[in-house]
Length: 385
Image 1 (cartoon, one colour):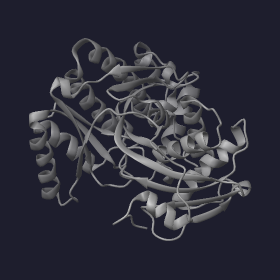
Image 2 (cartoon, one colour; image 1 turned 120 degrees about the vertical axis):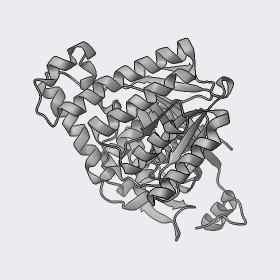
Image 3 (tube, helix red, strand yellow; image 1 turned 180 degrees about the horizontal axis):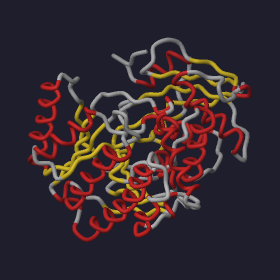
Image 4 (cartoon, helix red, strand yellow; image 1 turned 180 degrees about the vertical axis):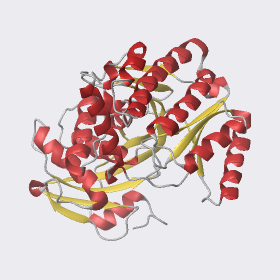
């Protein structure tokens, strides 16, 4: 399906025979620091980005859910809302269907059908949380169309449940909370255990800084089992240590705790505990010294993901190392890993040079040319029209 020569709303009308009643947007996210800590009840520090998934939607009264995407050719997928069940929807349509299924189970009011057309400029598989953005856009649309009265936190939890239970990805809550609750000009300091949050001002432009997103174009699929295996390892380690979650292991107790664990669990635990410390340090440095102080924390986070958590890959390692060598204050992989994107914090006057150095390094290594974006702390989910 293409929107060339017409608007997305026009495509919706051609596809479904009537205009959408609204447009709802939910952004992708960049996680500054706090990777793989959310499913360990830990701390994270994401920002929303300008790129978003938009849901053009109109309520239906016949219990039919029709789903289409400007990124996917062919006719709309047509589903019976009452018959939705885990495992019953394949491919990309499973994500919006999962949200409707979850809302029907949990909402205080009846949720029926809709015509939905999804449009997105969040790169898929790039570690920028395109799936959570899709879920949150659909959840926000249905919340409005069916007047459910659910808040941002409730919608985030329902979107997470949709991905966990319907799609089968055991993700934490960070991505959905970032997409729902972030504010422009700020990072979201989130405690994923109780969802307490505060918005930490992040004025990159005022500090003369740019946050580059270097999309390596190495696609990852978190449903392939690697992500689930990491989470299971962390949960096993916590059980062996007699803890509710690895978040409860104090840094001072880490060396002794590691001696009590099987060798394969040691690096996982070391990463989670030190990564939680890096989130605390990042917030403190932001408040005391401003965003430039984040640089070394980002680089240390990448080393931990590369050497302990083993979620990096040659392309993300090359992007991070090249960016720092070219003058970035710090760089690290962002997202679940096994590909995706690297973020690099750079002085704005060095941004083009750093990006060019990474492009050249990829060409020399025989890798596909990376896509480069500039991340600006942006607003969370909202109705646009």
